[in-house]
Image (cartoon, rainbow, N blue to C red; front, side, top):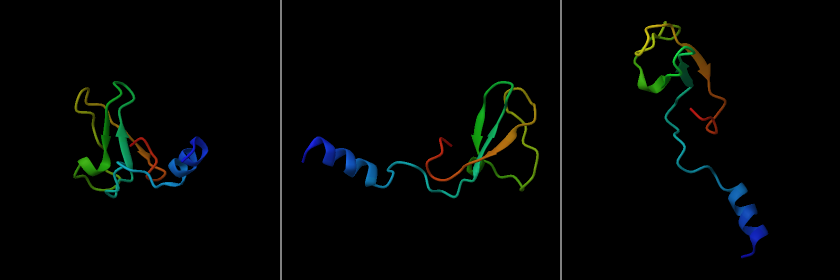
Length: 70
């Protein structure tokens, strides 16, 4: 297999190692850069989540699919 074929195969393959656990995004603290994935918390939708480090409200950022860094 040549280099071009290897690149084509890598681009065509499905992503491996990325979670597919139903996550819709993550909560972020803008003050101290703490990130908590939504599937790691047991909170009601639209609930206010506070940062475990500083106590400030965290914002929710939605993921745009399995290719998200979340």
